[in-house]
Image (cartoon, rainbow, N blue to C red; front, side):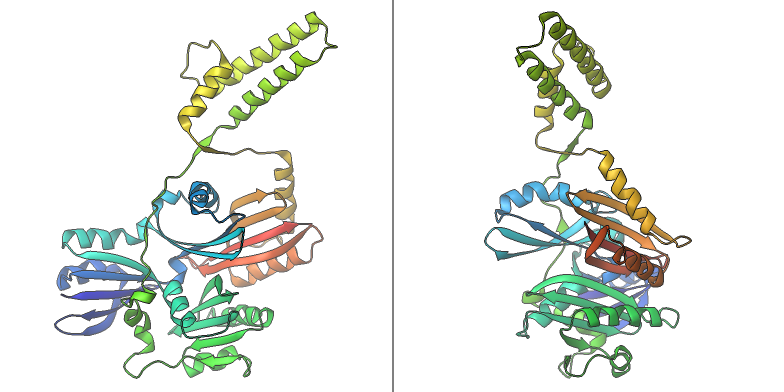
Length: 416
């Protein structure tokens, strides 16, 4: 049986084939179809590098996996660049406290994997998807005693940095070391190393290690067996059962959204109940008020359900509609959200190329996901927020470069 292991690094695919013979090398991304057509392999193991991975960290105030499965789809939907139905997923669950669960969500877009799926189907081959972030985390974790540490892997112009706190992967970052981006990448990495004074486990060339200038007392080198080249580290590790973490489509259903008008209808019902129960309202005034609210309910119902022609009891018909929709996540907008949004926008330095794609408010916590034109711009945004009295940065998540060489970022703030 011939097995091909493919590590997707930028515009290159680094491969290793085992079976009757062993073969290794690389080819361009636009040559995937031609390469697979020529080799006709039985198994395709595809390893995705960090820039192509979506990483989100979620927390829940309970341990029940059933409850988590119920609420997770709607929670994830708000933080993803497109519908969660368009991704393959892998999850890590941790329960550091009695009534607290941390879930690491790893996702790969369907569109990225489409060509591999089509070729596997065409040649009747099995296909599995992996992530270098997860493989490297599991590899280092099984051989260290520390609970707080940083793990770095670098090959060529690519560098992967995993941040582990209390034994849990809390951040994963990737950087490019082209001549144009090297200085910015080193500055950003040094910022993490200064902020997190942890032991650093590194698997990289001596040149890259010297460039990072890691404190000698914190530095620990990862020594690989003689037969295992650093370039093919993940090719060797991906078949090992303890490191094997494949990606699959979402297995639990995502919740449907209920229109905001539903909320207005129920609010109207509560008003009717209140008006009817107050003894000091005169009968005529109460009747006029009830009639007015009932008319508003009819108008809202008509706007929300234009397909319903026969309106008899708006409240009962609304309840019936909701029951058909099933459990749902209610989305609403309030003026305070707009106020928070405007305050954050004002903190972004003028004349800088920055864009926020996802803006989410939950109580006093604000989650931002977006892009900037460079790491320097992102640093300016970060400094502007840190200097404000209104918000505090509590977490900076995934930072990577997209296909247009823009910097993807995610950031969690707390309103003071």
